[in-house]
Length: 388
Image 1 (cartoon, rainbow, N blue to C red):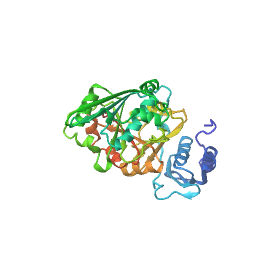
Image 2: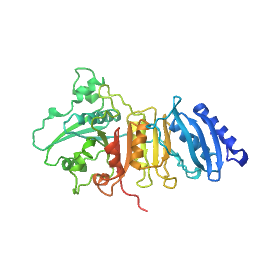
Image 3: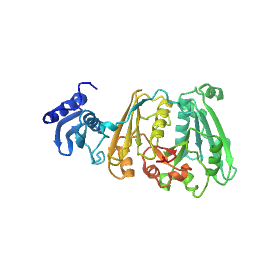
Image 4: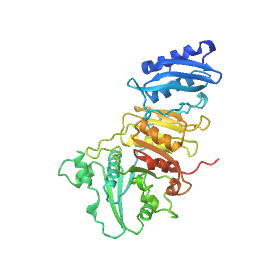
């Protein structure tokens, strides 16, 4: 930003200065802007072309004036029409104060994902999870471990999803090619069949020995948080606080095209709170962006709460991705789910506060409630509670 725009020194001229400043940076993206300065702070009125522009207008004002923004009443219009009831979240957007703005970090040193675990029940729904698991493994040159637990000892190796056929359909390897072609593209795939009366316990015991960077599996939202979690009541099995799970809601396509293997991941939503901290969620998104070699997109750091509860968050810059911060008020689950639809999020990433077992930590949390209702994949990242 231009260095000449320092804090305003003349209160009587501030309204005009603020209008000029916003128009200088946002041009025609903001229209009919009026600025009022009240005893409580600055009030913005007018129209803008997106919720991102609305947030940017407020951050520009917050960073160049000593007064706080009391209300951001900019109305979002899409292509000249007012935002519909479905589009609009009727609440003020308030950025953190200038002296608490988070610092930005680079994305260049982030490591890629290296170990992917995909548990399959051989159902059609689990095919969506398979497409995501193999695409992420392919792009990041990661090892992929595919596991099926049979309760009756009747499973066959041929029941696993066909890796060769999938890669041929995606034109990764030529038609008619074999295992050598798969090896040449850098895929290291292991298939495991285990027999156990408790599939969940068997998977968790395997993961306890074979740590994974990412677990990819399908969930049945209408049946609660899927039988993987339902069977865990009362169990004392550690899931490992460093393991992240990507949940794919059954019946929804996710962000990998099953026919072409193309990645459609351009909008990511990260709900943020003070506890648990969102650092691990941000780090996971950085790794995913690098692993999938994604060039452009946007990440929204959303806090549902008051300005006092807004956390201090560091976020990356560069590499074609836009990172922005947003605060809304309302019920956390309702607001997260609704806003994810408004911004057409392809992925929601949430940190889960589980003291020692991820599955236990997920039950009854905002993460679980969001997962039950989300229209897109949800990545849940367990961390230990931050101690005072």
